[in-house]
Image (cartoon, rainbow, N blue to C red; front, side, top):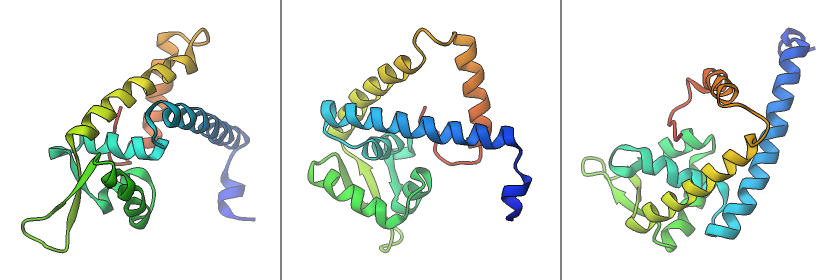
Length: 155
């Protein structure tokens, strides 16, 4: 047996399985609403949100890949339709011609602002009538400990 399998307690395993299950449900629900309301996939909105929070509203494809937990080539495939829609642009680095940035446009800023409002409403529905503000705050703090080392907080 793997060290990962034998070293994991039943409680840890159960917690991880619950996180994976809720991730799948939330991603499915959020993707459906974002697609119907804004015409974008969840990962596309997350890409725009990372750009919105970045200094100068621009990031390299490698930085975006790290923040989205995808490959740089996936970022390239994701950015192409967003460029056609003029939600993002491409900007060369002034010092290194090999480096290019994905940049949020004015249209992208408006859309990401609207999409954030949609996501905030969907997020409120997740906890509606089930959780107190204190419980949500505690959960947020606990989950933040897991994601603390990951770049690019967009909340």
